[in-house]
Structure formats: C-alpha cells, structure tokens
Image 1: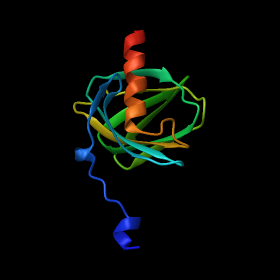
Image 2 (image 1 turned 180 degrees about the vertical axis):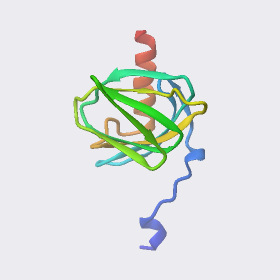
Image 3 (image 1 turned 60 degrees about the vertical axis):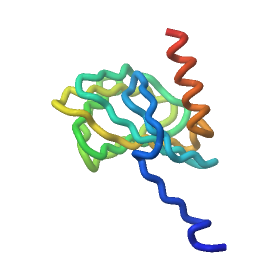
Length: 128
C-alpha cells in the first residue's frame, strides 16, 4: 500500500458550505471515531444555548467569541479551545467586528456523513 493510500489531504474551502443558524458549516471529515466541521460565525450572531449528546471541542482559529453556559462566560480567541462535556448546554455570541472561524470536533461523531448532517439541518429548519 502506498503512503498516499493511508493519508488523505483535505482543503476546507473544497468542502461545500451549509448556511445554518450557527453560521456557515463546512463538514469535511467523518470517521467512526471523530467528526470535524469548519464553522464560520458571522459578526453579530448569537447561538442560543443547546447541548449535544457527545463530547465536543470548539477550537477558535481566528476572531473572538463569547461562549457561555449558565452564569459562566468565557472569551475565546485564535488558538483557544473549549472542551464541552456531553449534555452540557452552551451558547455563543460573536460581538466582535468580524467573523470568527472555528473547528468543531465531536467524538464520537454525531453524524456519519456531511449528507446526514445536511438532512438533520433541513429537518431543524422545517420544524421552525
């Protein structure tokens, strides 16, 4: 087996963007153990507190975000990560003057593919 059969290179910009209530999601890696989604949160966007059944990590690539859970509030900027335990509700505010880019990492993954994630996002939109 050649090394390139074992290694895959992903370019975030090549992943299709999905407009969501949480910004533009670009899901680009799904395995049995982990999912990785690039998220761009536009300035002024507030994401209401919500929880996921899996452990997650929100890694801020650039920009500035306020992350909150209950009465606790944290400011994250480029190079900062927040690890969220399963079933812990968090919200996010982008009160800065520009968008923020982050990586959302879930383990184990909530979804098995970008198509499955897209279908769930369409269901959520239809429920509103």
